[in-house]
View 1 (cartoon, rainbow, N blue to C red):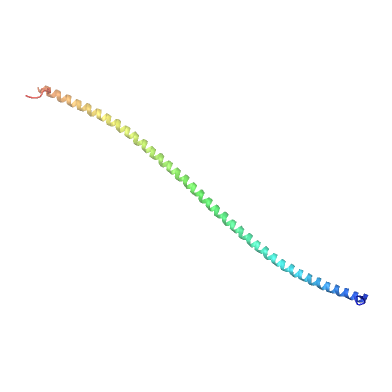
View 2 (cartoon, rainbow, N blue to C red):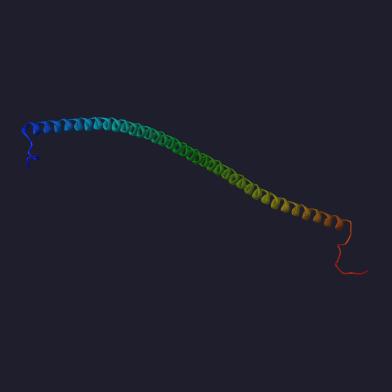
Length: 151
């Protein structure tokens, strides 16, 4: 047991040595923590930079998509406007065709009336000419045909 007995001075020296080792270990840990903190800060800065780049890329892509959507919307509007204009032109053409058909129908009606009038006039003239021929033949003493066949 005597060997196990430690004097106060030895105990103090051992404690001082332990404190010194502890302080060195703590200083080493602090140094490692400082180094790790610096590395972590650098890594975080890199991550932040990547996030900034990704954000800018996403914003650029979003702007490009919005521009494309606007262009597509503009094309659809142009197509719709062109369709409306074409529809108006077609309606005008149909109206013109309808008017022309109405004019032709009116002209055909007029021609039909004119042909009837002409037919009646020609018939009256033919009857008048036949009557005149009949009277001329009667004056000359010719007899009209009787309708009996043979001499």
